[in-house]
Length: 102
Image (cartoon, rainbow, N blue to C red; front, side, top):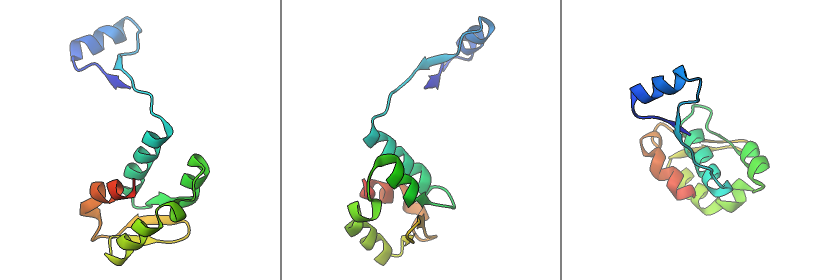
């Protein structure tokens, strides 16, 4: 969800004890996976592969094997059985790397 752009409207709703929500969006599993990958890659811990596999019913390493292999050879990610982490070289390219994975 997102809040009202207008501070006056936001405060008005709060004063009326109404949640100041201007709109919301419902994400399907593909969109949620995309969000999880984008957000996970931005953290120091990276993506939890087991958490992705469990949540989305996929085998992340098998599904994205060719892309993960290329990213590893380029030095953009560090891949273990449990984590996919951006390297210092890959961090500036986070959005592009996430897009390649999906």
